[in-house]
Image (tube, rainbow, N blue to C red; front, side, top):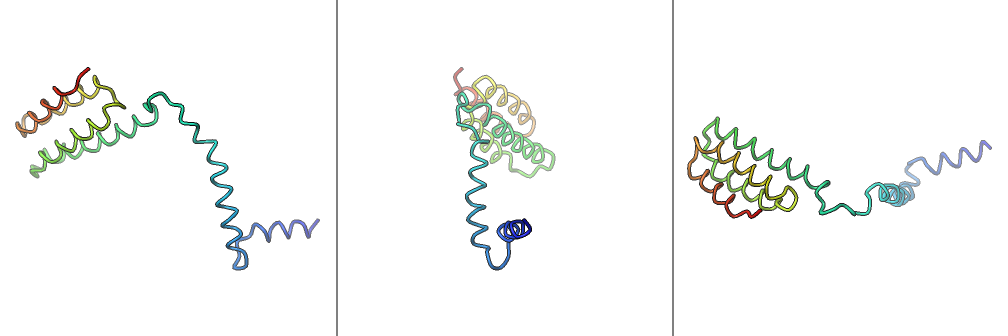
Amino acid sequence: MLKLHRRAADFICVSSRKPVLFLIIFALVVPATTLPLTGCGGHSAGKSVNQPIAEAHLTAIDAEITIAETTGSGSLPDLTGKYITEIQSSLDVIGAAEAKQKLADIQAKLAPYCTSCAQRVAAAAAQISQ
């Protein structure tokens, strides 16, 4: 019995003698165990998976806009374009109504600091059909 445990320990042990064998086993076991956890991709329109990612991107850009407003860095036009692009790319995920609402919120936020930015946001919101 002791020999069996010792052989198992030698087999599992990552030593200078068997690193290749360990890597091969690791490369086969990890994907085999994680594949069932990922699911089959049967989500309807991917909303439940991609919506938090889209929201995180928009929140990050919104934070950058807030910083630019308070510091007066002059990067508001670039950040506005970035926000509009992110809204357009995630339109299928967040939906037209929510996209328009987010654009309206950003427009109101930008209006006191950059009127041309607010006009760009209003134009982008007008292009979204419900």
